[in-house]
Length: 364
Ligand SMILES: NC(=O)c1ccc[n+]([C@@H]2O[C@H](COP(=O)([O-])OP(=O)(O)OC[C@H]3O[C@@H](n4cnc5c(N)ncnc54)[C@H](O)[C@@H]3O)[C@@H](O)[C@H]2O)c1
Ligand SMILES: [Zn+2]
Ligand SMILES: [Zn+2]
Image 1 (cartoon, rainbow, N blue to C red):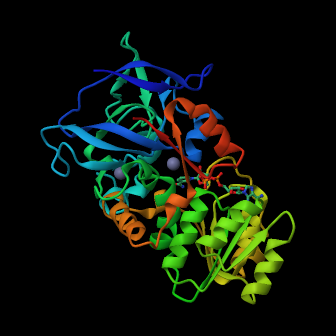
Image 2 (spheres, rainbow, N blue to C red):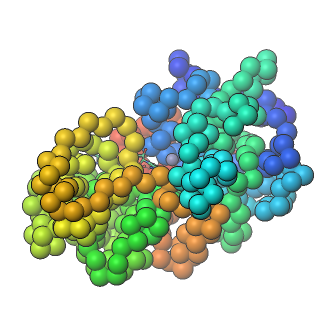
């Protein structure tokens, strides 16, 4: 079928145009996209740090309504409300041990432009292949995704808001709830109060951390961090965060969450931990980090772990986040600003200049 989509090329990042979309295969689902979040990872394609072959349709935080399902699809039916997640293969060691975020084929499946068979459902009207991103390409009015990428959600919640639960918000909250799993009463420092960091912060509150320290360079974001549950905030352009955290926690935090990807901040995050502390790192980009390894890592017996997609199984984790939201424990809507899809350029700009934390393009 012919659909309208936002096609990204080297010369033109946001070209709203007509393309062709294949019918769903037997294990696939056709979704009418209602809205799509913009994640920092979409921007890393544009700046070349996570390349995807052009032309491509970006977007990997889609939400929508099931329009048609393939003959083998069991988990959703026409009319279901769904969130689109990331692609995983389902047959590697990571997937089979219940950790799809640790899928060994993660990078290829989500950023190479095609599925495992080298196929994409997106083509130009002349029949040339267009890269599919994260197995969904949600900056379009329709998406064809594998059943594994499709998560059924409650119809009682505004579907427009839910797309970011498929990546940024799941990553932030899942890193805390699944990967760090902080003990009640423990201390945690969160570097970067963007969509990922603030989602982690709300999860730290759900986990009953008693000291939740947020660090950023923007006072407005730190204000929101306080509103969402930070017990302390630090503007690292005005104060030395390591010194202050050391004072607040009497020797360093039990847990750290690094979301900025800034080399010097990664070092600060390691230095903010107390003995046996654990740091989770999620930011992508180029990193040449120099640590005083013996003093800061070995002698303090700290753990540094990378986390992908919040160590979450989307099918079980996203409905949990929706329930937390309905119960008033996870007010992620406070991070969101809605944009019409034709304002995609503005939405990316507002994300980059920091004025919007989580832009969502409304595709309807
Ligand atoms: N690992 C994964 O699976 C995964 C999934 C989604 C996103 N990500 C990555 O997570 C990262 C965070 O995403 P986001 O959407 O929250 O980004 P964001 O840009 O909204 O947030 C980053 C925050 O860091 C702050 N910051 C920048 N420089 C700083 C400094 N020197 N000191 C303190 N704070 C500073 C910014 O002000 C901003 O609030 C990105 O790199 C994104 O690509 C990873
Ligand atoms: Zn896998
Ligand atoms: Zn993302």
